[in-house]
Structure formats: structure tokens, C-alpha cells
Image (cartoon, rainbow, N blue to C red; front, top):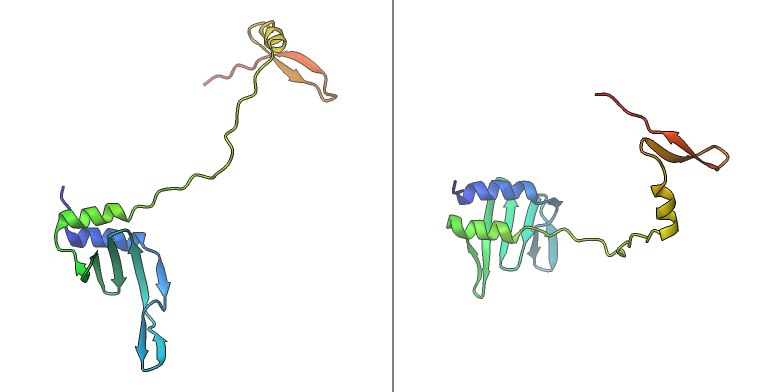
Amino acid sequence: MAKSVEEISKALKLKAQPKENLLTIRSGSKKMALPFETRILTSEGYIFVHVPPAAAIFKMTENGLVQVDSAEEAKTAQLSFRQTRKKTGGRKQVAPEMPAELQAALSKIPAGFKLTFAADGSPRIVKTRTRRK
């Protein structure tokens, strides 16, 4: 189902974070902030602005901002506002290799039993618990 520009603008309103006193006016040498809650999203070629009660998607061109009127272009703009989740730069964890002696010792544990440790730290073999549904 094709969405209209208005429907896409409504969806973008929820995505944008509100910011206070974002709009400013310069009167002579004084700069004053307007007391409006404004929501703005920007991407490479598009900008979304929501100042209650109006919202619009604009395309950045060489001549300035041009309002987006077609639903296809609004959908393209909506996709450009998506942010990729950054992965943390942590090191990859490598699984430790199990020595052959340890693998041979663990394979000698009979079926239905498991290896546990007692309170004093000594290893012991106990019967595995079977749970019913």
C-alpha cells in the first residue's frame, strides 16, 4: 500500500527527537530563541522539520530547500533518515581450544550423569535431573 507524503511525515514526527528553543530570530544585533518545541531529522539530501502544527520534508538543492510533493520521493527521504546501529568496537572473542586430554576425560562420563563440583571444590559425578512438562 502506497503511503502519502502526509502519512510519511506523521511517521517521521515520532522518530525525531524534540528540541527546545531551536528556532531563532535575529533582530538587528540581537538573537532571540523562539519558545517552540521543534523536531528535525537530517540526512545527505533531505531534511524533515516539524514545528507544531505543521511538518514538511525538504530536499536540499543548490538553490536552497525545495518541499517534497511526491510520495515516491518522500519514501526515499524516509529511507535516508534511517540510522544504522553502530557496533561496539570490542575485540572478537575467540573460543578457547579444549585440550585432547580433557576431551577424552569428559567423554568417559556415562550417559545420564554430569560433572559438578562440591562445596570444597572437588569434582564429582551426579545424576542429571530430568524435568517433566
